[in-house]
Image (cartoon, rainbow, N blue to C red; front, side, top):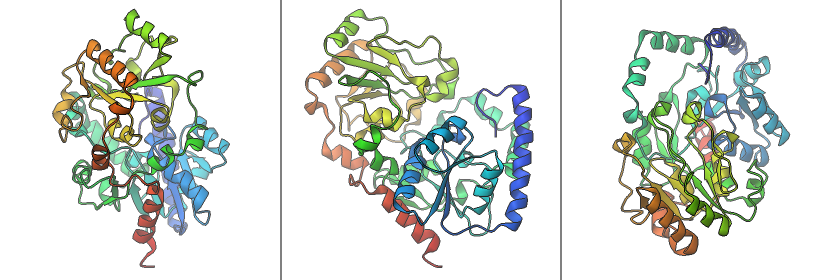
Amino acid sequence: MLYKNDTVFSKIQRYFVEMFYGMSTRIVDFFVPVKKKHWIFGADYGYSYRENSKYLFEYMVENHPDYVCIFVTNNKDVQDEIRGKGYPCVINDSLSGVWAISKADAVFTSQNPNDIKYAFKKKGRSYYYLTHGQPYKNCRQTLPKSLVKKDESLMAKVRLKFAQLFCVDYSMRDVSFVPASSEFLKPYVAMTIGQDIPVKILGMPKNDRMSDAEKMNKERWVDGLDGKFVITYMPTHRQYGQGAVTPTPFENNTEVQEWMRRNNVVFLMKQHPNMIPKLTNPIDTDVIKDITTMKLDPAVVMYHTDVLITDFSSAFIEFLWFKRPLLFYIYDNYADVEGALYDITDDFPNAFCYDEKQLYEHIKSCFSNFGQSKPSEKIVSKYYQSTTHDACEKYFEAVVEDKYSSI
């Protein structure tokens, strides 16, 4: 499993590291059985601490101390952050990581199986995919042809065999069930998983925490924004990072910037992580700030946001949880719209903008008529069958029933 921005040397080095720890885990697995109520969590290929894995993990540590719950990462900064909160965390590529993983009877990921390496298939072990968001587009359908061709190459097949032997030998077909947040989204969750796996309407664990002001205010955030009216732009990637970087709206518009200053408004630009390698000279002024590389949890960004702007990203579903104004800025003819699983124009008939002038007018409308710009309860309930704060507990109960009810 290769990491972002790997050089040729680091790729070779990583292969040997993964071979060593993969073989070590295989040996330990032979002698060490899984331990009941020993759960491990991972996210974002081991890079960051976010998504549903993070929030279910914290809930478990705080509310079910009879379970041993450990977060697994390959980012030392993430480990320091988690341990700083008083939660257990191990480095994936370490002997302590091998030991923790070998005993796990439940493995939780939110991006894909590669969130945790060496959690091989084993008697008594179950896998749970929490998802990192509810679906809006069919990502596979929007892959650039060059990536599809590369993914089907002989070298890709060799890497896959190596990964199955030394890194990850389970796939989505081995997952016990997948969560959805509403009856409307349930068939689309099933469609994007692409396997015959049960989909259960449980809600999203991150939503519980997104409603907890005390905890959200303790998370890392941008300094100096207290009292500001925050507008955040979170566009999706363009061709999985191979396309052009999304332009920052109003970067060269002094009229809009002056309006922001007069009204204590700040505009935050958060590019999709896939676009980071192409990001150059990000803007940082008193009214427009690019926060893409600040490694902020998207859920925390949304918590502090008054108005969210997006395009074809499923981020709009997460933001609906807050029942705050939402805008869609379609500045280009990006092909991702062809991969949309359903039409949202009827749900948000007055929220679409196609140039900066329209976007500015919509923003001013949201600012001056904040209450009237909020989505209706009908629309929120379409995407969230329940808005109570018990998704973590529901998910926990579903896992217990799946794993232990017959024991």
